[in-house]
Amino acid sequence: MKSLAVIFLFLQACLSFPFSADKSLEYSCEKLHGSCVLHNVLFDNESDLEQVVFQDVSDPLTIASGKIPHFTRKLSEKLPGVVDLVINGLEVQTLYVKPEMIHLEAVKNQIKMLEVDDDPDKTYQMITLDLSSNKLRDVQVLSRFKKLRQLTLDGNQLEHLSMDLFQGMSELRKISLENNLMHTFDTSRKLQLIKLQSVSLAGNRLIELDVVLWDLPSLKQLDVSKNNLYTFSGSLNQFTALVDAKLSSNYWDCDFLETLNPTEKLKLDEDEPGRCREQNLTTIKNLCCTSDPSGFLTTDLKNDYGIYNDKWEELRALKKSLHDFKQGTEQKLQQIGTLPEDRSLIERIEDMESKQKQLLEKLNGRQESVAVKEVQELRSIITDHKNTIYSLESKLSNLESQLEEFGERLNGFDNEDKFEKFKEIPEKLRNLEKQQSDQAALLNATAVELQNNITDLGKQQFRYHLSTVDLKSKLGLAQGRFSEVNVRLDKLVSQNGKLRKDVDDTSMRVNAMWNMLNEIAEGKEY
View 1 (cartoon, rainbow, N blue to C red):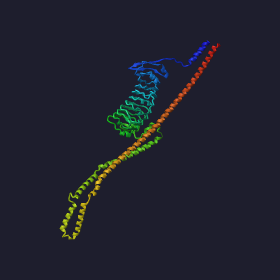
View 2: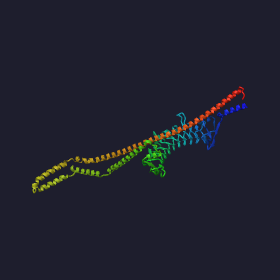
View 3: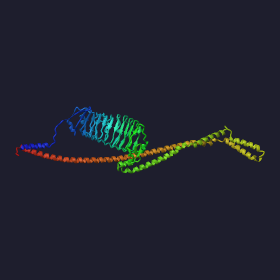
View 4: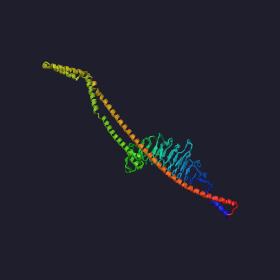
């Protein structure tokens, strides 16, 4: 009986330790529409892969159900021939992508990080990649996928992305980044993607969009709806193949919509009926816009705009000054524009030039001088009457000599000096018109420069806002993660305490059993 008691205690002590038996996990293909389908694939940790055997696994492969928290390089090596893979809804958190992969769909997981091959010179063959509905924040590793044609990253947690990421992806046809958290989407250098046909940024938090450096001759669809867009740098007309542009559910600058001049083939969407009125916005081309973005920013973001709130009033004052300046310029230009239409002065000058020409012809002897004729007639009269009017002869003689002197002076007078001023008048008029034209150009240039300065001020204001909002967002996430870590630490401390108690209890039992066995070996009775 004593021996049985010892054995019982020994078994009880042994059972208190974790027990595992070597076992082999086998997964076999179920053929479905030409694809290999696996069910209930479970890998809780890396050690589980040691016993895994895949039977007759072929390409394309779909893992339809199960749980794979970490799709590692080691697991990928277990599937050497698979280059077309679907792993949706398997709670994947980290995903290794091998260079040979061509098509990969990993939707509705919890992917936070992508892993790629360590060799930066290794060429990737990826053509289609869909990582929708995950938790990705950084996707810079995608720059390795130079052969990519379709990229879908909808429903992730991207806050910032640059079009520079796609440099060199000459085969790219589609980019979809819908329903992320992007505040900025910039481009630092010219980007030429001659085959890109569709870009969607819908459902983000963009305030400005700059497409000036986008050289996309094949772009047919552009979707920037459901953002907070106010400014648009560039032109839709630069995309010559564009046929469908979605701009609704934004807060566009009314000046941008006024200048929007889509071609006949380009179709624009429209805002929902009543939205502009309900949000106190202006309607232009069936889209909502505003001249004062501070309203929607403050409303949407509540009071998170911080110390920059007072700058909106300065911006409004600048815009009003610009508006007044433009009006004054237009009035002056209208006045300037009416001068060339007033032909009366020019006609008078031309008439004077004609009379000048006729007078010069007379004075140069081409026609008999009027003054000489008058002198001759006066002489005849004086001759006929000089006997009867002798008392006046001396006076008339004096008058005659004066008339002759006048005639001589008139005949010798240089009329070119006299009419030189008339010749100068048309030239002065042309100079006046040129000065007025230069003044108009200067006024227009000043207005454009002032407009650009105000626009730049608005953009700087937006960037300041974005930086403050991003910082607060990141601080909030950091606080959340800190709380999560504290909870895990508390749990770990609790588990550690329980583990220590179990070890102490087991140690006591083992020591007691050891002592008992020694005493039995020494022949002691119980």
